[in-house]
Image (cartoon, rainbow, N blue to C red; front, top):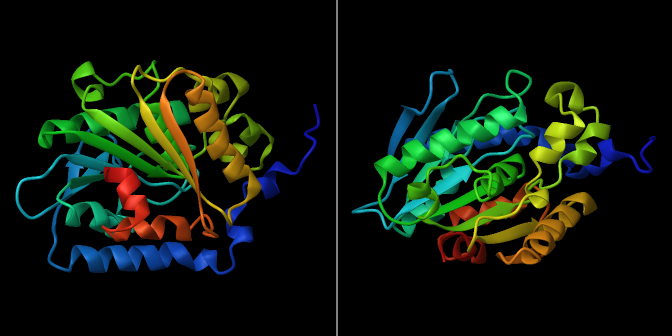
Amino acid sequence: MTPSRDWNRAFDNMAHVAGSAQLPAHWAAEGAAYRDSGVRVEQDIAYGDAPREKLDIVWPEGSPKGLAVFVHGGYWMRLEKAHWSQFAEGARARGWAVALPSYTLTPNARISEITQQITRALTVAAERVAGPIRLSGHSAGGHLVARMLCQDTALPAAVTDRIEHVLSISGLHDLRPLLHTGMNETLHLDMAEATAESPALHRPLPGGQLTAWVGGGELPEFIRQAQLMAMMWDGLDAQTRCVVDSVHHHFSVIEALKDPQSPLCDAFLG
């Protein structure tokens, strides 16, 4: 069937936000400066054999309250953990150890394989940091952390029992529309994988808690994806909510992760 809307435009955040093409270089420079600022960062901890199966841990002063995880976005096809170190600051300042994993990008891995990589990354990070676990991710990273709370997760029970909350920021929760985009030349999704990898189409783990957070100035599809996730899982007895944050766009919405007193950090850490 011919789609009834322009799905390329529906997901094109770079065209929607002026100046966004310069953001990756800005994030990379900001991340490098943060790592050189005196915070303790343990880099390139292997969680598998592939070159990008590595994670960093940003450590707080003193014993960690628990493990906070941030999984980056980039439509599963671009960016890496080094772009995002600075976004650990809010949680680090509140006493949490923050893990930031990279993962193999499409087309060198399918999205279902990336889901399993994040499963392994979280398992390794959980072995290194005791206490409760809180997950966050942005855009494609929001998809990946939501997948950790689905009933088909491969995470060991010893890890899932520690997950207190998942924060999906501007997350992608129904992947089926991506079949109608030019991005799918890189993602290589088919209907079976798009359905299987859509968190909104899964049952959540019993007792799961999830917040879908999205900027009020984002493309309508991202607001729909956040609302859909909260509504679907609320109907399956998970504790969910959807927060539409002011007029933030897809890239400004995550800036509040740097601020330990921000409402976004409150949602992340409780």
